[in-house]
Length: 393
Ligand code: NZQ
Ligand code: ZN
Image (cartoon, rainbow, N blue to C red; front, side):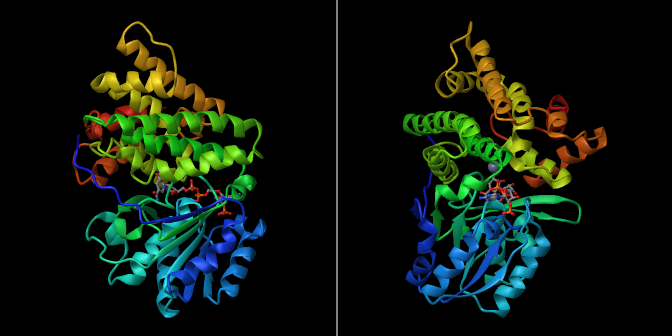
């Protein structure tokens, strides 16, 4: 078993009407002025922003607003947010939206609390030493940023998408009303379910010795998401299924399903970040487009875990021997992705990178992890990564 730490400082308020408590939650922390950060319009259209603003006003919390966060959030808006947060002397960043808005809020929180260029934290040139407190009102179950230590930002110049992982940015609180996700387009719901699955799968596929309890929690989480994603495909209005998926989103990425492991593999995520950096695709769909190719490329190194995944998470019957069972599990996951309308290849994702672009992305993946091999199940060189991208075509 690996040495592990588990730190989850985020207070969760979950259920119908939860967003009405946001003002009180901020006052409880002694904060008086917030930067209200949101996306491209869904939160305004649904009436959510009005309710949040009312809650702030009733609690006597002043606010300045900055909307316009796009999926794969951009560095330029982060800089604008830092300027605003400093000028207005806010003491908390309140994100109303999904992973993109929360990640942008975290980056603003770093930049407003420290000196120098915030992008340095994303290239790994420097480590952040402070972050303003972050609060989240979650509107899409997907990235898990509402409890995670991660923030992923795209620098427009060069299409560089990079993450910064640090406990300082874990939100102080997250307000989660599953009803807020009822307005999601089916594609976004599906992308979210895939991302939630992947956050546990990235940890489940590792090169260490696992705790039985962590495996059991992970397998139950994956089965719950598989089942409820199918419910939502036919009944998007189903509140119970929305609630199961929303809670899974947080638990899948707050460290719980990686406890006691070597941290996991994460090669699929790094490869996807290159795809969405270059082609601006939805994160969840980018993951499903490459996961099967990654899994087939590396599975010989951990046939035992791929077999457990097949039997316990995907619940397929055993094949003749470990390898056949492992491959059945991979196939079952790809079938599932397709059944909820997600791609399992780059062409289904709607992109056709040239050989040169594939090699550029592969090199960039390796650079993003400091020039070391990528992943743990089978440590990958740039040539391996390029081969997986080619398999995914
Ligand atoms: O901008 P609006 O109009 O709000 O539209 C958004 C956006 O177009 C829409 N949406 C969100 N809630 C909605 C809604 N539409 C209707 N009704 C609602 N209730 O959905 C679209 C996608 O939103 P986004 O925030 O981009 O989705 P998601 O939560 O999947 O976040 C994706 C980003 O998170 C990063 C990804 O790389 C990507 O940049 N990740 C962040 C992680 C983290 N911080 O821990 C981990 C992940 O692995 C991931 O890398
Ligand atoms: Zn993800």
